[in-house]
Length: 280
Image (cartoon, rainbow, N blue to C red; front, side):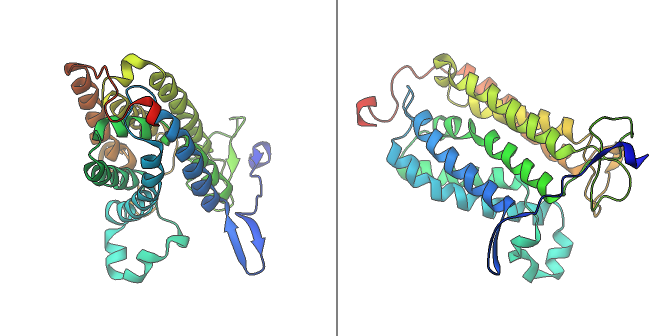
C-alpha cells in the first residue's frame, strides 16, 4: 500500500551550512516573511486614509519581531504544554527544539501594536488593518518550512489519495500533507482575499474591518485544515473530536465578526488620519 503513495521529498532542514553553523529553512521563513512584510506594509500604510508614515512602519518592524517570537513561544507554552515547561524551565528558551503557536504570536503582535500605536498616537485599528493584510504571506511560507522539516503532518489518508505521503517521523502509513493544505488556505488563499479587500478604499475607510476579516478568515481556514492535521500527541483529540487548534479559533472567529460589525456601525474615515500623503 505504501509503495503507491508519493515519497516524502528528503530536503535538508538546514538551508545553509557554514562550518558548524547552519541556517534552517524555518529561520529563513521568518526572515523572508518579516522582510517582505515590512516592505509591503510601508506601501499599505501610505494608502488613503493614511495610518502611519514609512518611518513609523520601519520602527514597528522590530516591535513585530518581538511580538511574534515572544508571543508565539509563550503561547505554545501556555496553550499546549504548561506542565512540561513548568517542570523543565530551561526548555522555555530552547526555541531551536521547536514549539511556536500562531495564536500566541497573534496575541504578541496585538500587544506590540497596542503599545506602539499608543506611543505614536496612531489609530490602533487603522494601523492593524494594514499590518494584518500581509500576515497570510508569512503563514504560507512558514507552513512550507514545516513541510520541509517533516513536522506537523496530517492524519492517516487513504493510499488512493494521489498526494498522500509517508512522512519520515509519521510511521509507515500514508498521511495528508496538511502543512501544504495550510499553506494554500491560511497562506495563499487568505492573502488574496486580504489584498483584494485592502485595495478597496471603501473598506480601508472602515477601520477594524480588515482586522476582523483576517481573524475570521484565518479561523475558518485553520479550523478546516485541522480536520486533516494530526493533533499533537501530548494533547490528542478533545471532547467531541475537536482539536486544540479548533478551540483556539472560536474566540478568534467571534472577535473577527465583532470587529467587522463594529467597523460598519461607525462612520467611515474619509480623510487621511495621520499625515498628508505628500509627507510619506
